[in-house]
Image (cartoon, rainbow, N blue to C red; front, side, top):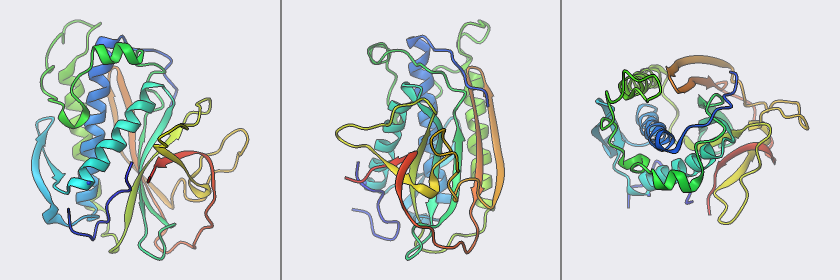
Amino acid sequence: MPPSPNPHQPSSSHSRSTSSFPADSASPLLSAFTSFLTIAIHSLLYHRGLYPEQSFLAARAFNLAVRQSRHPGLCAWINDAVDAVSARLRTGSVSRIAVVVHGPPPQQVVVRERWLFDVDRFPNSWGTAAEIRAARAPPSHQLHPDEHMGQDADDPQKINWADIHEALRAALQRLAFAAQAEPKLPQGCTFTLAVELREDAEAPIGHPQLWIPSEAHLQPPTKEKPDQGEALGGASTKPIRSVRAKPLFFECWLEKGPEAPDEITQSNSGTTYSASSS
């Protein structure tokens, strides 16, 4: 996976659920969430000013006006990163997803913001890979989110897509409002996408290496290493939205780092993983 493109270069890429979903529900639900995540990342990059405003175009998703980057390298990077997150979600190994904003040079190690999506209540299984392929919906960046709306709303065993999309739309609105309300970031900030794994999850190793361990100051506590990384928790925390649209339950919030934090020594160990550069 290529590194996220430089924002200042011109364009030329709770309690845990133990349930599982049947493949015919799991695949569209996972696609709906990854579509939400893709749109959320584009929205954060736009409203936090990480890329030039003119490099975004107006679009619609979940019947909501949104912003989408026109930068080909950035769009490709986001799609690849979200696909990698989706693969980890299918295994039930992800506790949280974070869009991490780092300070400008020479303070790249400084964490200015972490936009968190707590998915620890997601199921441990979304069906087998073969089942999901057989029932596959369009990829996240090609999803048509209104196609299931209103179907089977009166059947408690079926997915109420109207409720799902309303909840995701409301979360995107609150996320955009929160990002707009925050003070402007300094020029030169960068970002990455990270996942925090559940305690019992296996590390995402293999070839190609899609994920690399995050720095020690971004690692959550574990049984082996009970001390939380210094950059986690933030100087302040701002709740954004709780999504309660059965069977999707997740939380969104912002962790803000100190305005002038001390430089933190880097180390490569732990159970938070960031999108890899290769």
